[in-house]
Image (tube, one colour):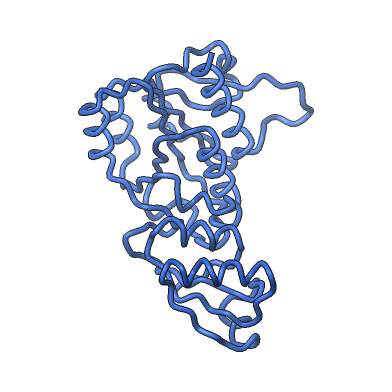
Length: 247
């Protein structure tokens, strides 16, 4: 079992309707009491426990902790799991032309993963795709860093990112890799069905995925270091997509 301890993370998980509970309560201040009320209203079971016991289960708690299953109807980052095939079928059936997908290639730092999900929620990403078993896998850190948005952002964990890219292309997506040497992102036409690929910390986008990108988008900068943190880059790129689509 895993435990969410951040107030926002707990709130959003309860509001999402995803399986969770019980809510363990050791010492409830005003903010924690609001969450207790929310849990009761959503029929989440409460368990009173001692502070020492709660510290042993969830050391960074603030008097409360929400128990979540490692594997249930949700994936380990706390979000409802989406099937890529079903996602693409829905696009076709609904004739949706504007769609935004983010492909994460070996993002291993859960802080980065959570921060990326927060940007995905803010800028309207329709689906986040990552490789199962090898991406960031710490539910508590991801949910807390994402301020609870991990419970809302649609995610698909799949074994083969190359195949996912091929399926996206067949569905009419243009795929651009994030690369500091790429064409300035504001020069790209990012309307329609677009997928962006972000590479892992330090390693970048893997060769097989690079070979299947339709092009590369860079973020012009004048800094003294060679690149932005991947979660910061994600926010900049996603903002540009939103900006172009709202013109």
